[in-house]
Length: 311
Ligand code: ACO
Image (cartoon, rainbow, N blue to C red; front, side, top):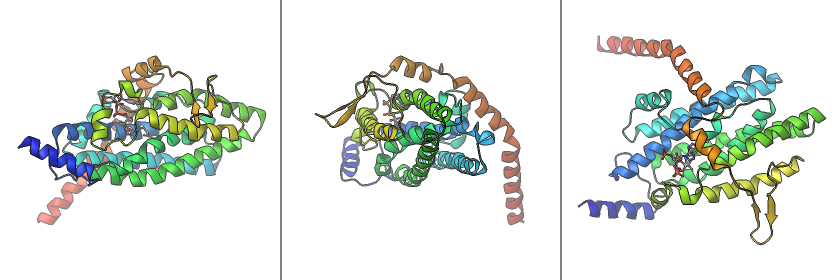
């Protein structure tokens, strides 16, 4: 019976039909989606921290308003992703608990510090640019609630990417000191951004199953290459250079060839030993404790309304 069900499930996926929360699905499909959507949600929430650092120090009111809106968008993305994960039968409290206790993964990129205002430009341009490259195909992922959540997320990410590139443009056309700041930010963010796409295909343990289930439409290395191809000309347009002596355009393949990624650094960040892992977790825990009164007030209000309605 199970083989029949599995066959019918795979046939629906192959026919590009969406799987919805009440449909039968193999446990492994459910588990991998919970894993990926939860990690994605945590990334959005932790991703608010590096940029949140600069809200009080944005160089103008206009920059501050845009950055504030952007960081709020990330919070919103986290919330709809937690909601998408909940449709698979996991409680949001459980996921939040896993994040706060340090037991959950989130994107490696958010464990790097934001040292200057140029980092806000580089994050928008590069980090959000990488996120879009990975997330556009997720709009066609086989699981309906995740795919639909991605549509709005991608629209907002495109705005984030534009605001980041615009910051870089202003700095790159600015004074010598501003150009140096933009270059320094690119130098520090470039390699960690390439790591965002995950381990090389040969070491990506989830890729085979996720591709068969049409959760993944492109491999980690394919998306990384697309990102490099799209981004290098943008950097050159700004008059900036990339911190990779091996970077060169390969006429034969029409791709930008890039040098070796330091996977030891990636593994260290995943183990919790990146530059900011401890700070991020501590900041998230503090924010959760400071928000306790809001959760208590919301519960008390809901209870009051329930009693009124019952009376
Ligand atoms: N940072 C942290 N962990 C990572 C990263 C990364 N950049 N890349 C891969 N990993 C982890 C995987 O989560 C997996 O860990 P697990 O087995 O403990 O769950 C392990 O490394 C092996 O990697 P893969 O087998 O390649 O994992 P997967 O097939 O899930 O591919 C990917 C990884 C591409 C990140 C995928 O999960 C994905 O597309 N996720 C959705 C997008 C997302 O989360 N983006 C977050 C950053 S963008 C943003 O928030 C602005």
